[in-house]
Length: 147
Length: 147
Length: 147
Length: 147
Image (cartoon, each protein chain N blue to C red):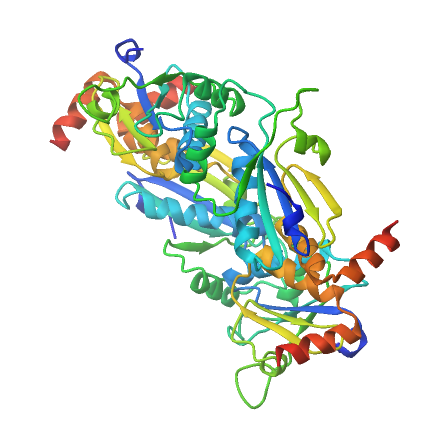
């Protein structure tokens, strides 16, 4: 799965683990609410299963059963193991500290927010709502003014 | 209190009653969270106490004690009684159906959303976040395209 | 209202104020749940409105409107003002420190528990459930062994 | 693991699955709260992992990781598969319909309650609290009067 095909949409990347209590209680339900709240043409929600521990307990069939039981509708990718260390590739690339993590990527493909741990619905809604209003041009301006 | 002085900001108007269970459990805490989440230069939260019933139970000192006990920080207005009927003036003007009600007004002073009853934090956050991104020009365009 | 007529039942006395946030969010809904969970022949729930502050804001019509709006079904008494100090009579008699407070009284009329602030449903359920099993004889024995 | 060694205590048997949303959100946290609320000399909480589906996803290492992540302190047994059908042995013996399920067993070893799905804390607290008050003699009487 590649994020390149999502260009022009706001991307919400939610890293989780099926055996992480905060992922199950907060991160996953929030990802599902985001998926149900925004138009898919504006916002893409992508789950990322980040198995950086409990390797012996995890198998793709565990994730498959979890997705079935929790009725998750958004696409979910398995993070690739990393030969260079314990943190899988995508988590490392996006500098995630653990699970649950949430990364917001704007319509031009640039990371605009990193969050680790539970996120407030009102604030995350506001940030996604603001990003959806950006055109390619205003996204550039927003980053210039933030820099 | 007049909304004219708030022009250029997004205004969140929250109508409530101190003896309305849904106002106390949902409307008031959400108004407080909105007040704490957005920059005051972008978003003004205004409470409106709408005493359309229990007139004998209500007095300004009840509202004052309520504001003190719930530690509300945003400004709160008392809706004016209406000689022409039971619905007070401001509630009638904004076509509110009861409490709690939430009205979103854009930077140009036009009503963009009415909601009656509990509101989802993620959705209301998204709507306020999107409105904060509008300039005077884009607010006009948004309304033209919605019409 | 007198507790003497409730002898032979376990009595749950819940002191609250209509303008106290913890009373409204926790104490009152828990009293209502206790009322709905136990048989009235075993457990009597009594509300006690304890107006030890905001005297100018409070009137019996405020309490009446509150009871109506929150659809409270258990009997509620107004605590008597106390000429000797700010704490009303019944609160003082039962040594309540504020609102919400919960007092458990056994079938023989003796106080078995005082709690100030929010109470855990599981624990309070267990304590009431245990008291309902006491006969007059076992209640005496329980107090002797606790002394 | 056998329940015979728990005779003289009230036993709370909680059947769950690590991939069952209601077990994770309600059944497991309630079992943990029961374990923390009652004295171990009065009440024994026993978890029962009931893997009647998703067999390919489940392995003892999944359960071990789950117990570690959720910091569960009460003993947990793995239900034995049943050659005669899909319902494992202990679930079948106690006539459980699915997960989460809760079974209350009195001090004499007799089942006093079956519940399937989420349980109210106040009610379950009351029932356990009442059972803890029973002596061997009163437990017999209670069952005779219920029959």
